[in-house]
Image (cartoon, rainbow, N blue to C red):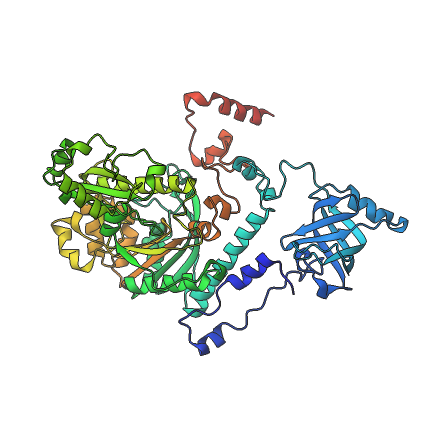
Length: 625
Ligand code: ASP
């Protein structure tokens, strides 16, 4: 069986033997991987993209879409597998076949039967995998005609994302969407294989209609027929997976749909998919090793080998060095603390910042930045900055030494409270990288995959809207770091947690934790420290009291992971039917209005905002018609 090169890559790309598997085990569990049979059970003998010279003389039946037609002599037929040239018969006896093939509009779907023949010498197309052959057609059937298209299917024809989403079923025919979704399916298959067949995990589905969970993301509500009672769509299967541990399913996984009412961003969707995992009797290292093995096993090998173990960095170090908890470690421009250089400075704003608790002066050096950035301080004699005169010579030398400044570099300097100064510089670091890359400097090699574990997060963070109260840095079920447990009762804000995040090229692609499995401790965290209504979680607290095993887990964001693996600009490019930026389905216009009588069984009524008259009227009209 033959494959277009991207398809071959796809199948070969899924790395073969995991480094750790013993030969015997792999013999039993990974029999020779067979290429799938693409034409079984259906009305074709072959796919369009698989035919080569070795098929010469074969009688074939193909089904596909008309990609284009040339001078009513040739027609190029396409399916997901590739393209093949069809010769339109010109003789009188085949007039009806010619009529079908010449009249069917582009993107119509046809079935053709004929013989695989060699292209005449000199007419081969080396750019086309099937370019040595063509099909001499005997019969043709128009299976369905295509109307005038809203856009051309070809990848190189630019179309707005709104139009692509409105006609998603057409957009899905593009090479890019075909490749992305097929690769996604392949990787998930390899993950299932790794988890279930190699490591004894059980795939268990958990409910989508659930109950409000305290803390965390905003949840979607679903009305019920009981007055005033609502389900919530789960933000993740977190509680269920912990309950499964208590139920004795000690190695669980699920390709789980999660829902968060948080509005879209390029890397977020209101509904998204996680590879959700939980294990009993495990520690942080165990989970990390599992995930490293999982990614190595499922990684397409044409994206380069995944080197293990992944490096690890504490949250404190990530913040201090990169100004974020998800550092892009593909490039430097690290944050440097230069507070000591300016201890005796006369520069007012630096003095001021350094006199405050946690006050620091930090800087990043943007190599070659003078070409692209507004200049603040320059290493040359004429430092181009209003504060330059106030910097003493020895300060200047020390500063240059610490920052390793070269001619034409730009230093961005900030003074203030440690965390704020770092996160500001962290954002500037990324902005500068964007600016430099726009000028053609390659800082973040797209072919490089830089994995990083971020560990030792604080268990709690001050709430954004009320910094005197605490909220969970991960979620309220996360266990404290064993060496910090005593601080829970005295200085909870200082407690580190057993929470770990997996970062890839500056995106958080996974996160998890070892859980609290003691009911009393969980109650204390929820009620006393987080001031949550424990009644909402009484089922979980009760369950923890019935012999809950120690357990922990993680969830990988499948959409983000696939977005990075495929090099797509948005997660919407790796989801078959995504929502728009504003959370709408542009194809079906969901969410949509429903007539008031449909709301009656739920005992709810819409209170229309003043500016929504037109929507309300259109609903009334709709009802009247
Ligand atoms: N449920 C968590 C999340 O969605 C992941 C975990 O802790 O396993 O972030």
